[in-house]
Image (cartoon, rainbow, N blue to C red; front, side, top):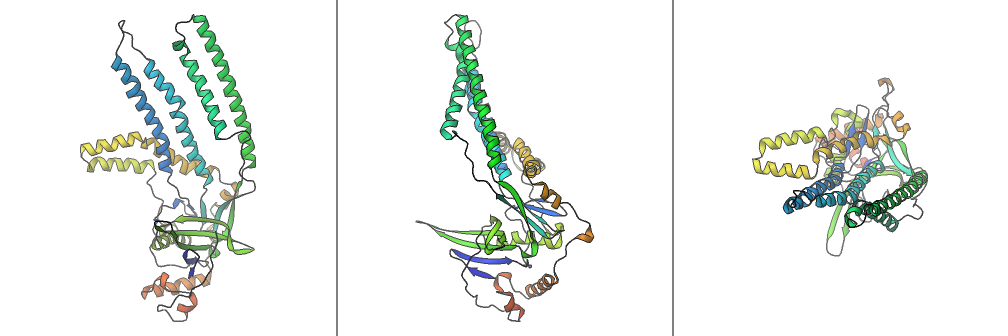
Length: 418
């Protein structure tokens, strides 16, 4: 059934998750994990985040190799045959203080994003949906800590490390005892700085974790889950953009027009949204064999197979260019990190109650679809065989009464708010 909304139009898919007659295609790679009993929906390009953080490693190696050692070899040895190691050492320390922290920051930011976007899980044996939401607490800001304080602490520690390492060079004309005493003072200052910042962050982050929102899963019957495709038109000063979103939602008990928990994905077009919905519906109604497998683009095995295929199909120069790109983004290591995030990290933070709910049931305890839903699917299947389309059939009452031709759509206002 269609409804008009303030910004566009809405195509209702459920309650009563009836067949749409479309082919099940995981267009947007929303399916992340699949077993015989449950299916996980979780979107996000995890591979790109891993490649971006590892890019800093490649930049470090390039700068040390070309700028550090390149300059050293360009200058050459002195008259005594000694090489000047100052340039490589300078680049090494610079990368340890700049590139390494940024790379680690992006890596842990990716881990945080994985933990904070838990999957929607559908259990076909129980015919239930587990949808995540965050409860209690609110965003907690660390006391006395903001971007300026973090930047100052970072610059202070980085300056102290650099001063400690380069003190012998800058003070080479001074007595050795004086140089050593300066280095000792700098080392003491560095230890104090690291202990102060480390102790503060340790206790502050524990406090933040205590006040942060908690992840819980709402369990809801599959047959009454709200699902719809909404197409919006956003008009700006110089362009008009159309966005189509597939949403799954659990309504609030006291306000059916609002969502207690919801998950959405941008599908690009209504047809793609129907294909994406059919993946979910086919799994719940007909089993894992009727649903596409998770995409393997982010697995190490897929990357190796793609490299072997590229070597067969590409000539030498394009293949070498691809290998340079693979090395620069450290794609081999990025796939290892991504697989770990998908198989381990994303599941580690899930509540124990969800794991117990996901345990397989004996077949005699499996929930069965209602007779009403089975009859509805049979009627729809016959209607599709006669050439009708899900998007053209209008309310159930119209085509069930025999008026299966095109009917003028009844314009209604309102919108399910998720």
